[in-house]
Image (tube, rainbow, N blue to C red; front, side, top):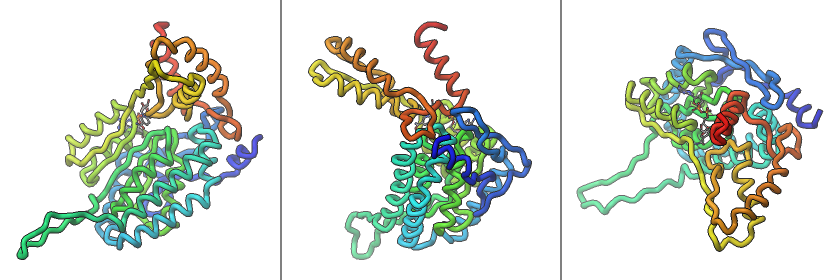
Length: 359
Ligand code: NAD
């Protein structure tokens, strides 16, 4: 057993939705399992929430928003709370990193050095900018008064993917909380643990209960009701293009809530005839595609290379590949872990065989 596996085995894990500042089961009591993608072992059972639970979470967010307990707080005071949250994230660096690695299959070293510190940095940055948002207006006449007033939207829903669970949550709750909104987060069903723990830390930092809620479950059961909710004012989503399209439909079917989408991408690298250091280029390209188990929306899945460099690049890339052997994500030396789930593994395998014309 590795040192980090031992920590993982003893880690207290969240097991309920986080609504109104406390963990609670979903109304039906139903659960689903979240597993360690390395060996398939069940890590925790989490609420399989549905529409009624979404209503509860949104009502909590709406109530706290309307109360003004967070929305009307001085921006400088919100800054202090978010700064405290960033500190708490770093105080709990090891716990959060192990939880993230265990649940998502991400290498522990990346979680310790990238995912958790970047989450803290993002929260701190958005907190810091809060009391420094200035605007300019055109000169007004002596009998006129021009003002720019920034107001929170209200209740913001955030639907997350599984590839950067903590960082994606920070990118969404950072700006939403800093500007005074109340938030309901639906993490990906494969990777919900750190979202729940982050919400708990937020309350410990001073975010009032009910301002940040996390509700777990499947996309159609939790994501769709959030997308269609009449009391959600804006929704931010990261994930597949097909699901992103659905959120535009949900908005059209309900209250025309503002929808912000970040969806699938295909990045290409272009290597021109005057490229010099092919070994270095291969090293960078291998990192660009293999880092984070290729589960990265900016993964360079295509290389467009000048024919003069084709053979040398292929040879150099083959040499690089041996450095990216997948392993146990809880071993410090592991550079790339397992794919996030069996389902995703099958999907990748299918697409690869299809690309190769073998099916
Ligand atoms: P997905 O779109 O199925 O899931 C993303 C989120 O949407 C999850 O929380 C999921 O529960 C929820 N969801 C799923 N179906 C839903 C529905 N019918 N209604 C409402 N919510 C629903 O994405 P995925 O399968 O996790 O990932 C597939 C692809 O998404 C990847 O291959 C990648 O291309 C893309 N992706 C992009 C990014 C990015 O940063 N742009 C990040 C992760 C994934």
